[in-house]
Image (cartoon, rainbow, N blue to C red; front, side, top):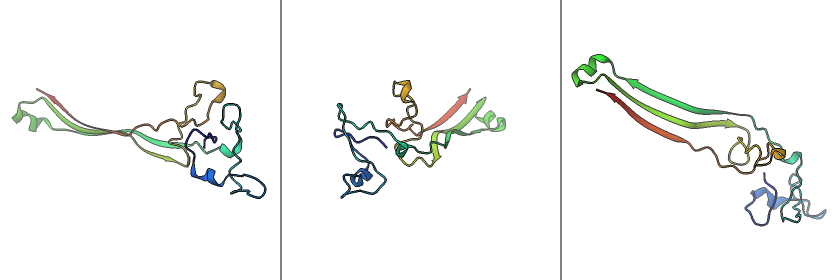
Length: 132
C-alpha cells in the first residue's frame, strides 16, 4: 500500500479508513494525514507484507532436426524454438504490481518500500536457426 496523497490514485480500501471515533472505518486502515508536502509519511507495520516469491523467469523449448533429414535440404543445422521470459510468479504479496519492489527509490535509507514499480514484462520469442 502507498500513503494517501490527494494528487494520486488510491487503493479502494482507503474508503473505509479511520476518520473519527464516530466513524472508525474497518479497523485496518489508518487515518489519512497530511504533512507540508501533502502526503502521509506515517509508516507502520500495517504496511508490512510477505515479499517471498518464486518466479518462472526464463524457459526455452526447442527442437533440432536430425542430420538425416537435413541432407535432403542441403542444410547443416535446422533448429526451431520458442522462448518465454517472466512467465509466472507465485506470491502472497497481494498489493502493488510485483513483490520485486524498488529497493531504494534513489534513497538507501528507504530500502524495501514499495514505490509502485512497474511489473517485469512477460515476453515471448519464436525463433528459427538455419545453417547452410
